[in-house]
Length: 168
Image 1 (cartoon, rainbow, N blue to C red):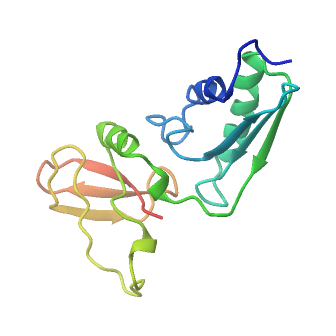
Image 2: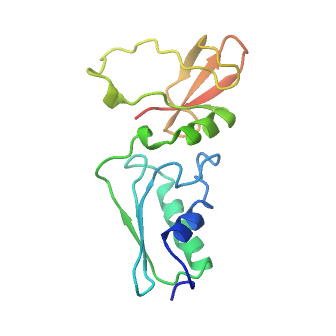
């Protein structure tokens, strides 16, 4: 059975309480990986999720947390579906999610690869604005940060290292 008066708004409310394990400044709904939530008349809940990329190591933990949170809130029957198409893109991050990333010290993606007409084959010098001081006098130090979806940069203006959530 499901809680009395429950609806999809209540389900999204439960899911908004689950932080992304790799970027805890964002919950899984504002990260954009929760695609659809459905509550059937018999009380069964179906949640569709799309990983940020196919090899995301956090997905198993996120799936377990979704089921646990829904069970803890009275939803006994939960089905998870992983949806790979269309692929997740950083375009699914809301402006408020990008602002939260910046406040957390992570440069938010400003565009996606899909916006580029051609993908450059050589490494170009792309300046990422520092989330601390806003300067574009920055330099990429590593293609990968604490997770594969982030890169490490250094700000020559305020002399702070910072991570960038890479655009995909």
